[in-house]
Amino acid sequence: MQHRRLIQSMTTVAALGVALAVPLFSAGPADAHGSGRLYVAPNGAARNSDTSCRHAQYTDIQAAIEDARPGGTVVVCRGVYATSVTVDRRITLAGMPGAVIDATGAPYGVGITASWSTVRGLTVVNASGDNPDFPYDGIITAGFTAEGPAPADHVMIINNRVHGNKGSGIDLNSTSHSIARGNIATENGVGINVADDLGAPAANNVIAENVTNRNFGGCGIALADHTGAGVVGNLVTGNISDDNGLATPTAPDASAGSGVILASPIPGGTVKNNVISYNEFHGNGHGGVVVHSHVPNIPDGPMNDFTGNQVIGNLIGTNNLRTDEADLETTGIYLGSASPLQITVRGNWISDNHFGIFTAGDVTVTGSNTYTNVDVQMDGVSSF
Image 1: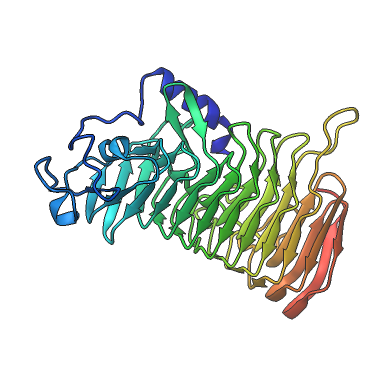
Image 2: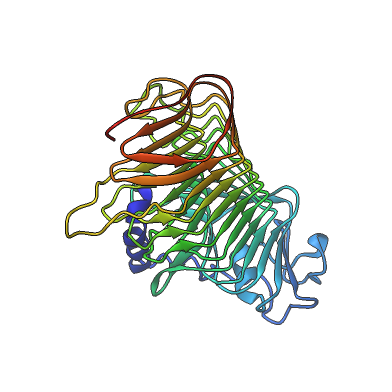
C-alpha cells in the first residue's frame, strides 16, 4: 500500500525544503483580523476591507492561514486555487460554494498539523504526481513542517468534496478523536483512509454519513494498521460506499476494493474494537465488509489483535465483483484471517449474493443476520 512509506516521504520532502506551512507571500496585513474571519478570493487585494468575498484582502490561502489568529476562520471564496496548503494553527478553513483547491503535482491538497482544527465546505481535487513515496491525498490529518511530518488530533473534516486524488480522498492518519462527516469522496485511489503510518495510533475517530463511491484503486473506507501503532476504537456509521475497487478486471490486481476493510499486512497488526454499523454497501470489487488479517501469529513474536470488532446493522447488496482469496462468487461479507479470529456480525441485511458471509481461516462468527436471495448464508475455507 502506498501509505506504508508516508513517514519517510514526508521527512524527505521536509529535508528538501518543501515547507508548505510557509506562505509564498503575504497578501494582507498581519493585523487584518476584524471579526476573526479572513477572506481569500482570486481577485483579492491588500487595500480591501476584508469583510466579505467581494472585499477579500488575500489571494493566497496559505498566506491567510499564516495571518489567522488561533480560533479564527479563513474563508475561501468561489474560485479555483492551484495550490497545496497546510493548516498549521487551530483555525477553521471554510470553503464557500465553488471553492476548489486543485492540488495537481502536490503531495496533498490540505494537510492539517494543528490539533482542534476544522476543514469544511471545500472541494479538493487532483493531488497527484509520479513519486511513489508521496500520499497524494486530498485532505490529510498530517502535514510537512520544517521539523518533519506532523500529525494532528481532534480534527473535524466536514462537508467537503474530494475527487480525482491519486491517494486517499480523506486520510485520517495517526490521528485520534477526529471526525470525518458528510463528505463526498469519489474517484480517488481510496475514499477515506484510517491508518497509523506516522507511528501513532488511529484511535477513537468517527467516520459518519459520508459518500465514498467509485474509488478506483481500493476501498471506499479502509481501516489499516501498517506500523503496529494500531487502528483502535473507530466508529464507521451511516456511510454509503458503493462501486469501489473496479479499476482492474480481476483479482489480485483489484485488491482492497471493498466497501469497508479492516486489514493489516504486518506481524502483530492491531485493528480492534472498531464498529461498522448502519452503512450501505453495493457493487464493490471485494465484499461489502472485509477483514484481511494477512500474517499468522509468530511464536515468540508479536500477536495479531483483531478482537472486539463489530459489524452491525448494515445493508449489504451484491459485492465481490472482482473476487477475493479462495472466493470466486458474489459475497456480502468476507472474513479472512491467518490467525484465529472471533468477530461479531449481527443484524445485517445481506441480499443478492451467492455467499452471505464467507470465512477464510480459523474464523468464528457470532450473531444472526437477515438474508434475501442468498444461495449460501455462510461458507468458507480452512486457510487464508
